[in-house]
Image 1 (spheres, helix red, strand yellow):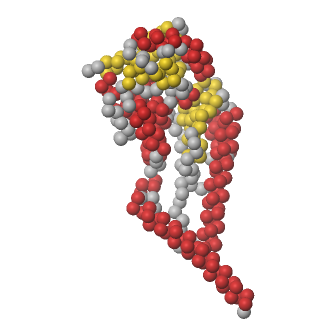
Image 2 (image 1 turned 180 degrees about the horizontal axis):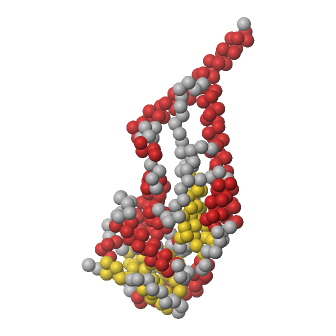
Image 3 (image 1 turned 30 degrees about the horizontal axis):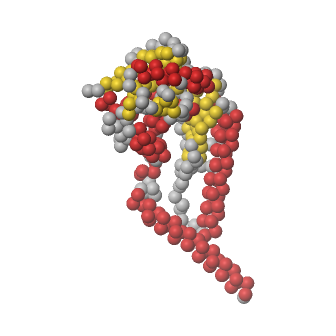
Amino acid sequence: MTGWFFVDNRSGSLADTLERVLDKGVVIVGDIAVCVVDIELLTLRVRLFVASAQTAREMGMDWWTNDPFFTPKAVDRTAEANELAQQNAVLRDRVAELERVVEERR
Amino acid sequence: MSRGLYAYAITRDLPLDLAGPWLVGHRGLALVVAEVDLDRFTGLDLDEPSEDSPLAVLARYHDAVVRSVFRHEPVLPLRFGTVLEGADAAVRLLDARHEEVSAWLDRVRGRQEWGVKVRAAQREAVRLDGLSGTAYLAQRRQRLADADAVRRAAAVLHEKLGERADESVSRDVTRDALLETAYLVDAGTEFPAEADRLAAELGLAVEITGPWPPYSFTKVELADA
């Protein structure tokens, strides 16, 4: 297998810390607690943040930002290219099949 | 400027020097609190999740206080942004939830949390120049088989780590992460080294974080009544 990288990040990145501090732990409810933070909004945001590629970018794994294959503008063309490649592959296979049949009939 | 009593964690009522925050104790249990300026907590957002954003600074500090308790005593971290009406409210909570809190503290005593993440492989661009249809399909099949093998290896890793942990909490597998799990383990064990070794055996790249206070294992709601 190729393309692997190793990150040993035992101190905990900002995303790891935010996720735990904002989304985990004991919640105190009822009259004794005062609401000062819109924690639901922050929790939602932190989930999105953690799920997004920003986590990786923050750790320095931003290899794709300079890769034309992954830049937003290139996305459509990439999808198009993939589709064409697949069509191409299917057509090539059909041509090969037809050539074989023609060859057999000779 | 309005002030409030911010609560960081629940622990045993034993002397702790926390350089700022202090304990409000009651019947052997204590809330770790500090008086804060509540204005600092309004309008927080995650638009700029950099280390020096206000939210990051406050979250890091919250974590630092929890950790400083965690180094000496069992700790139940409280959710970020917990502000109490006052010391009386802290005592009321500790009184009403004495049994429950004691049981939770016993559960996490001498244990720590480790995070283990296995990311999915980066997808490389397919080079189509001079690639025949058959070769393309073969390459595609190979990629799918590789991805499947990695997924299975991640499942094996989780199973083996689970045997070495008291509890585990997993996040759903996503397109990017094949394994994202927090394990609660005895503080004396060589869990991270074991995780490294197992992952290497399975040919997986892992990210290991910890030791954390038991954030992921204290998801509970407490009320004073």
